[in-house]
Length: 544
Image (cartoon, rainbow, N blue to C red):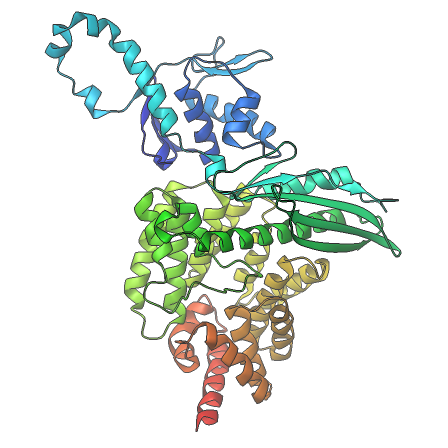
């Protein structure tokens, strides 16, 4: 749905497309979900909306939504200066809900420019005009409200986990709730705990699980099913010792939710690829262009001229879709970093333009902000990348990888490399082998160790990451570290695998022009450049 319907509430101008409210003190950005609450109250101005209705419309019954609604109402009242009793903007109806009591009108040029003489000529219409305008405003805001949960993303039904025998310290009911909460934080997953959900595009999935004794510990079995056909789509086991403690329970929930998230997005991406491209919606296009760990397709052919067509098509359909701008900025910067003979400056200028738009459109969206942190890494701006990751953690303190990325950015080719390598090793040790975040932590550790000149440690971490899931980043680090160790045959084999994903990748060119960016400008870049030059020379000798 479009987000181009501006309206006024009293003396305040509301611009949903930009997530901004302008008042006497200037423009104030607000979070997208809080804007959704405001738009819903405005489109049904004067009507009492129950908390359940608002949560269902805005969050889709996501876990934690009750507290989020309370915070949203508090934020809006503060924004509108509505601290008076009785309320002047948003009224609380005891044991029922909320209603917007301030006047609402569309910021429409057509109504603003209506000639006064024409209105006076038809006094009957003049008397009806306020009623008609109020009805039109409500109808128009409803049709163009910025949130449609079932339409943008996947509907996920989390069924209660079962307890099969002694639970070994892992309570099935609590685990169900914790997994559902973790899943609900993913922007494309709309989570329910009960009932049914029939998404219009058929992308509906159910999660079920069980907790049972396993040896001296406990096994959590999780299954993803199609609730319509009953077909089992994926199943996995998560084995843990008994009595995990709070940290162990958090890691278990992270592992389960992360694996489910990856699997669901992989299923959705496969389903989306079967659709006609012109029939795809913006969120589908961005998922199509996104690498999902564990999927067969690593990237959407990044070395071709039309590699960014999904993002560009999404922006054409909805110029205010922030994830499309963030994804395009990230992709352009990534391609410029890795592709020989690319028009680097042109691509970076375009990437910077889309990054600015994404940040302005979604200043409180953790997913968009995280994509922008990756963009800043790709252009070699360490300070901006660190600041954006800090912003992600301020918005979502338990973001699954932002804190790990922060240690990586802080330590890559820098004087803090040793300390951050130690921190990353500690993270890796705390993550179970079945935790999907483990591959990212190992890949980051490998890069930091390469920047320090610790080639054996870099090769070990990169190989362990590469064994979990192949990706360009760990592949290039592994090839370079192996070359430094004199393991020429292994280095050439990994190099060939990496170049199968990026045919335009040239190690000598990368060492000469891109390593300063890759190293985020750190003092260790000369050492890293020498490493990739050695890999390039090895390939040259092999080709002769």
